[in-house]
Image (tube, rainbow, N blue to C red; front, top):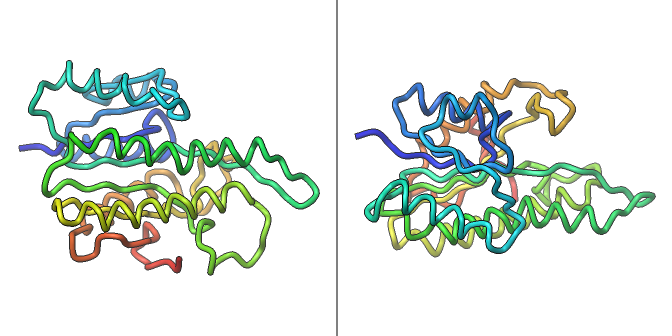
Length: 226
């Protein structure tokens, strides 16, 4: 029986690449995104678009669609919280509203998505939150990026709590840093392609178990410092 994978922000970039690779493996893919794209519409089994995850009631629409489209016994095998926002703040340009927005997208949205979808998870399900090594406090040697760093550090903390709380239910949870990826979010600068990053994320997700739940990994398999 094929696995069912739900990916947020699956309309482009790393999210789209992950969707493509999961489909190639024979998985059923559900895409949740603010704006759809021709690529994800042609690919996914179900696209739930028009979803602004910063809104508190956004997940009501998602859960309603899942219940109607998939039936009462529907369960997810893998949930990947991929949607994210990248901005920069410095001491000379401290944009508090911009920082707040990154907390909403990068930290609170994955928290709300995961909590809302708990009824669709089962023993053996996996939750992966796409983070950044910039969320590592120990690894911060250059400063700046106040909102992005702090929001990803918050995501890491949320993920660790989910890992502890969901382990007794048989659900494994991790945060994965994709690498410096050539996506629109970073002006298509980067060291690796979205396809390469997605391949690593899928490999780390496949390796995720209750024995290593709560980990913080690079997509290349390296364990990252908190």
